[in-house]
Length: 280
Ligand code: GUN
Image (cartoon, rainbow, N blue to C red; front, top):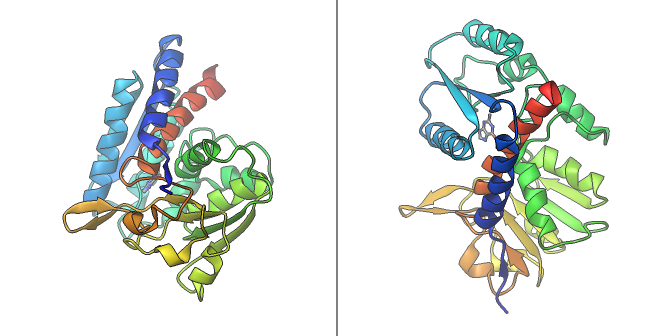
């Protein structure tokens, strides 16, 4: 039997229509300020995608570029300025940052009420406490929406998340725990990951290793979420070997067209939420 393909692109499109209608009814367009420091190729593409999608639904974006060699003080000064500007609803600083910058210092400086990435410790702490944060990180939020299309009740499900990042693995584990899942997070020091994934009802691969998850890693009928965006032989591929697992999995997100479009949709949804929380 062939796996159900979870269509993130279509779901994101649906969400965009809804967001566009919300913006249309507002006094002014919500505004997202994006800080891009240096010239990381992948970051350039991600930022361009975010701005293009925002524009399509009538959400305003402003891009602030800093040079690769600018200082942490320069970046902090810009954040301070955006924090107090009432015309700015949401702020994101695209990661990764150049190596002279302490990423925690930057994230911690963004006002939690404008932190539409949901990375500030106030937001991650509230999530940990099972309190409603101002914002939840976009990729985990998008994954939860994708999971809801194939699992109506997550309670009691065994989930293995491959990758313990600030952006995906950690907040996603908390969201799933808050939905009564039993969650295992694996990382590069985990031994025998395969033994863990074989028992999982849901596997989320967010490790950045092309095609790592093979058919013998998964249980028959498992739900697979692929967060990976890797280059393989000139094409984009995920962390899950799609061709190898598609006749064994119950459902799977494709790459591209799965998690990626949902991440952008959730960031824009968070920006509208920022506007409403501050001015609504
Ligand atoms: N780099 C990769 N993913 C993200 C994200 O979701 N937010 C930011 N700010 N940087 C990223």
